[in-house]
Structures are given as structure tokens and as C-alpha cells.
Length: 116
Image 1 (tube, rainbow, N blue to C red):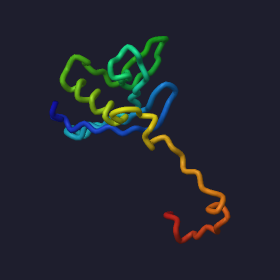
Image 2 (tube, rainbow, N blue to C red):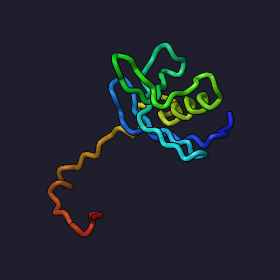
Image 3 (cartoon, rainbow, N blue to C red):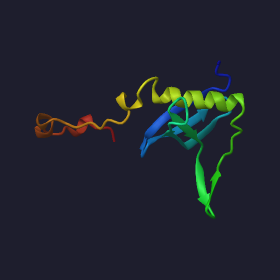
Image 4 (tube, one colour):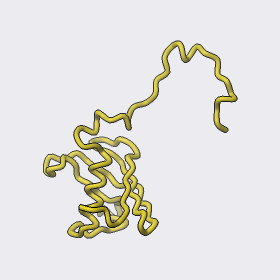
């Protein structure tokens, strides 16, 4: 499947049972933060890709809405899964936090090295 729409996906962080994603459609200059990829045994990919939603009067309202039966959605979903990694997303480095060693913590900080 070729990428006709210029879809790019960034993994923004880990959430309970999945990841939060930002989708960019470069062909039309659209940026949508708040997509989620939640672990799901019902999907063959292992993840359920969901667009952003808000709970209003006890109902989930998707903003924006997508027709999930189109080629656009298929490409969007594929790009989301690719962003998570081909095999096991938990083995990638996107969720690791830098922890300095004791030696690094003892060294003085040079303020010239910091970007302000």
C-alpha cells in the first residue's frame, strides 16, 4: 500500500494498556494529537487504533470523525502500527528515562553546556 496522503505518526508516550500518538497528514497540513493505540486481543495487529474522543453527556464523541472503511483510514492505521514497531513495542527505547550514574551526579554542571 503506497502512502498517498503523507501520513506520519509520532509516539508521544505510554498510557495504561497502550500508547498515545500524534498523527500528521502532511499533504493537507493537519496535525491530530490524542490518538491512542490500545492493546487488544480482538485485533490481529495486537492494537486497537482510536482517534481522539471526549466524553460528553455520558457518550464518547470523536473529534475529528473518520470513516474506518476507507483507504485513508487503512493507511493511517498501518502508519500507527509501524510507529509502534514491527515486533514488540515494549523493547523500543521510546519509553526509557535517562538515569545518570553516581559519577555523573557528582560532576559539577557547566552552565555553558545548557541551551537557554
